[in-house]
Length: 558
Image (cartoon, rainbow, N blue to C red; front, side):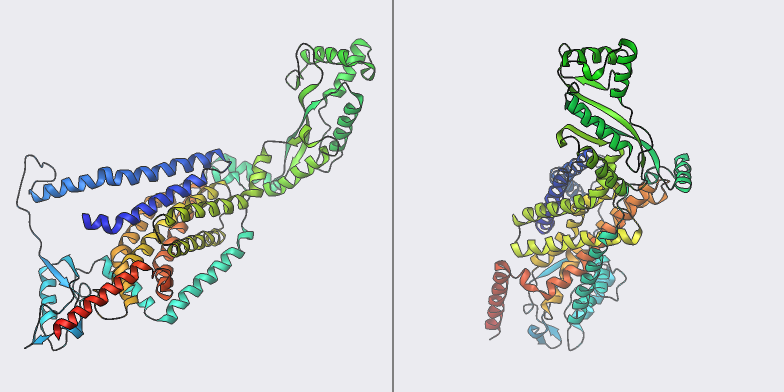
């Protein structure tokens, strides 16, 4: 247990804190739903990290004591039995040049002291013993034999991945392929659709789909909506300001996408004064204007549409609104351009702080128009936060490398979205925010394993390949199992009747697949080719210590 914590405790700390930091930074977005989700996810990561060491580790200790005391799992207080001990052996890494052959037998003092405790079957013990003692030449043992039937996931991953990194040409081809897909993904960012289609949010058998499809077929998706023209802090008793508002309303009525006259209380108020009291609106002083206006609003439908600065002695209208029926574009990004056009018209007559025109769907239009910028900004800030956390524990060069790989993963995710036809809307935006927090785990685990592994006792051979083999053996299996179990948890969404949940699944598959590819293939290739990234003070100290150990062995041989 102590060995497990010493080898993986730092990686768990780095990934948990980095993920939590990425989600905390994602919570600063001005979208309440996504902000709440990010805060919830960040505290989930922190809680999981604390519970790992506060509950899970103590339970492991208690269970180990139960095993040592031969207690039954279900009824440890009542039932005890003899534990079937599995065969154990200690495999050591031999150095062929330092093996001393003495009448066909190998000296037990001339190999390096690094060893690994493995649970082996009797068949493996026999085969390995034969390999140790037969023949004139002895090959170094680096794990279980490929002939054995008990080959585990470590051997499978090492067998599949290690040949990719043996040749320098292959390593460079891997890096060039990832760079090519990175460039393609960056170029495809501008091709992503940013329209928020409501059809993605309802079940496949919903009647809403038929309604929207008929609108699209008959009217090209355009509908009629009510534009709200809100006017603030205007003295309507002033003839000049009243004339400016009237001119603004006339300009709106003559605009391209207007389909009706403005619902205007000034026009109705003028007619009401003349028909009911024979009063001319333009001839009224300010006090009488607002006194009669209060009478008019209290007796009409405009009571909730006109708010005065004071109920007793009003001097201006604090805020009011007019309504105009307009065409709404089916594509929200184009509707945002219309929103800008409407506000450009009204601001020709009144200052920016006194008037604006919009309807609720313009909020979605704004988001569709700016969501790409919001996504990129959020990813950049989240990456900066992750980089800051890494700098607290790792060398700066390793931190820069991990940050660059995470940035590549995020960029590749845009290419995945284009390939799967996924639009960048509020749903996929939330998963892009998640991507930084989720993908950093896979890169940190493999990078830390390669940087921290000690190849001093791994025998002769290429130290780079030995480093990759040990890193994959120590951490690669855990990363692969974590990715697979994460995907299994999301596969149930494949049977969902809503496109929103299926989109979530497609994005999740892309995030995990791209992260695993970068962590298991690109990261070892880059660190193997550019070892200066991690060859810091600690690595040099280990190499010097290893050199001193070899000198001592040579002196003993002499």
